[in-house]
Structures are given as C-alpha cells and as structure tokens.
Image 1 (cartoon, one colour):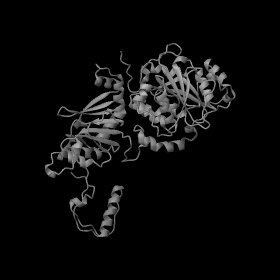
Image 2: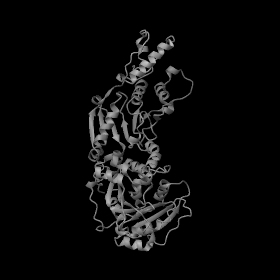
Image 3: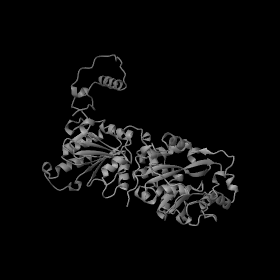
Image 4: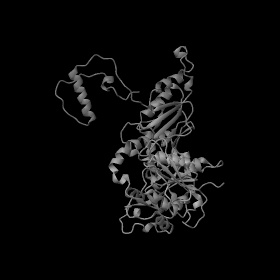
Length: 523
C-alpha cells in the first residue's frame, strides 16, 4: 500500500484535491447534527442536506437530540438515510457530538450544527480531502444571515433550490456577516498554511469534518465542556497528527448570529479557565507565572539512576523557567516496602530516597514504565541523569521549537547518548505516515524538521554543577524588631528597584549565610 502524502507542518497546499463534480467518491460520510430545541431551523438544515451533490448511498445524517423539549422529531424533507438518536446521559454539544461519532456508520464524521444551511457541494468539498489523507481536518466557509425570510419557505423548496445550486441566492438583498476573527487569521496565515501548530486554535466545529479513524485515535470531545469544545477538539486532533485545511468551497449559511458573536466577552470569560487548563497551545491564556495545569505544556521522562543525581536533576527541572510541566520518573517503585530493615543498609535505599523525595510533589509522577504517549504539547526524554538544564535552558529550547514549527530537538551528550525534545503532534503525524520500512527520523525531519545541538552548548551542565535554590536558615538569637523591620523594608525596596536612605542606626554586619536571606541561591 502506498504511503500517504506528507504534509509539512500545516501546509495543506501541497495536497491537490479533485475538482468538485469531477471525481468519484468512495468513502461514506455521516453528518452529525446535534440539536437542542432547534425545531424551527432543523427542517431547513436537513432540507439542504437532502440537496447535496454527494452520492446519497454514501451519505448518512445522524440527528442527536440533546433532550429537547418537546422532543425533536424528524421532518418529512430529509436525506434518505437519516436517523434520530436521543441523549440519555449527560448534556451539551460535546456530549451529543461524541455520542453521534460512536453511533455513526460513516468513514468520515462531518459535524454540522442545527442552525447551518449547506450549499450543494458542502459535503463533497469536505469529503474530497479525506480521500487524499486520513489526517485532514477541513473547515468550511460560512456567512451569518438573518433567517427570517428562509423560515417562510417550504423546506421542499429549499431542498430543490440547493440541489439546483441556488443556495447562494436564498437571501437576496440581505447583509451577510463574515466570521470575522476567523477570516482575519486565515488572511494572516495564508488560510492556515503558514500557521503551523497554531492552526488547531482555529478549528471551528460547526462545519468541521474528520475521518472516524482520526477521531477515535484522538482524545475526541471533552464531554465535560459546555462551551469551547471545538477548540479543545482541535487540540485533540492535532495531538493525533491532524492537519487543518481551509476549504472556501465548503460553503454554508449560518442562520442567525452565533452566541460567540453575540456575547463574545462573556463567552471568552467563561471559556478561558477551561481552555487554559486543557489546551497547552493556548499559552496566552496560561499567563500566570508559576502555574501548573491539568494538561501540561511539557512532560519530561527520565529513568531513575543513583538517588543523589536523580533528585538533583528533578529538582533542577522543577527549578527552571517552565513551571507548566510534568516530570515522569521511571523506576521500580513497587519495590519500596515497609518491612523491618536497617534503614541505611536497605537494598532498595536508592529507590526509596527518590520515591520519598517526590511522592507528594504534584508535578512529579513516579511510574514503573515510561508512558507510551503523552497529552503534553512536548515531551523531553532524557537518556540518564548525568546532565541537568540551567534555569533558562528548557524554556529557550521550547521557544526555539515554537519559532521554527519544527518537530524535534536532539541534544547530544559527550558519552554518545542523546536527549530528545519532541512535539507530540509531530510524533503522531509520523505514526500515521510511517510504514514498516520507513526511516521514522527522516520522516519526522521531512514532515516537521529536526535539529541537533550538543547539550552543553545549549545550557546543560553536569548535574553536580547545577545550582538549585534552597532555603538557608541558620541558628541565631532573635533580632531586634526595629532592625528586622529595616531589613524587611530594604529587601522590598531592592526587589522593587528602589533606593532610599533610611534614617536610624546602621545595621551591624551579619554572617554571609544570614545576609543572603532565606532564599539565597546555594549549592
């Protein structure tokens, strides 16, 4: 079987889709239409889908009723293969779409909201990309319009006009509003072809599609989300290797303004804490220094070695400029026991010391086997515990990857070993592309880019030489409160960049240990 075409980064322009109407489809498509109290517009949505150019024997429509009141019923005018399922557990669009995905019979899943009206070639335009590669995530073009005049028509008339290619003439003389913030970003990035890993941020689910295989390989919809679920799905699909396509010939009318357009500030305020927690690519939303999140930006994987070096290396990682991380330490942690033993002669002493050092550190996971996949945006895999990064080293390497859109950085050690900092989505793309005889490293370089640095040239030092900040508090008699207050204010002024002359007696010299304060950087 021939290997799929390779798309570098998100440059889908290297793919050549067939001309609409000039090809023979073979994949079946299920259009998943979630609905909650859309009784007025759903008949027109289904009428337009009944007028599609895509072969009817390959087209299924699955209406998912999210507990509408009164319960949704199927209208008379609809595609031949239309089914209705009802949500029994949970609620919300993400939950309904996920249930629809699991129940769908099609090779391709096409999400389509119950207030959208498709032009004749809308489904066909989406489907042609999935015939080229199984990792395409096409999005369509839409215009927002007042649906009042449409709702006066018989759905059968709408079906016939769509089938005749007249969907663009259904709203004559009316103002059409574009999806402006999406259009602006498309314009800046050559329709996402130059967006690289940021393309997923502009996945708009109301007209999106994906192969069922890619959906099932991803984490899919987060069914706990009530808003912003399409942006999270974009992240999930990118992590599975997806490339995000803009197809302006996949055209639709949006019947009315969306909630995001009508109440943008309120919607964003609601979404921000959820998306910040779940989507590491949304770094501007993760703008609080020192925070960690449910899904980390970086996962570091290392195998435990001698206790002192392992502890110091992990402390170095936690002490760096990337607090948004998880450190997975691989070791035989189940061997740590409570049996009677001379503590300093314990056969598993090295393991015990590492175990106890990080047992209750929330950013460290003690695992018996290295994780086979990660939900983090990047994974840094270390070959041993001989080198540690200086505080700014990891952040600088991540920024290097972000600027270039590359897939990996290889850090060579003098011993011949190497650490690898890899983009999770790039590894997933290679998994989708690689055959049993392919050189995966060459394929990673072709599809994303790989560069090698000597580790010691980019901020990595022998682990014993890495200075990690620690508390310093020696035994001493109590200080006079006034002198302590003077020391307090001097420290605050220094931190704020101020220099003031404080009246009063000079403070007597103190030992160097005390002069450094509690947080002096000590080895």
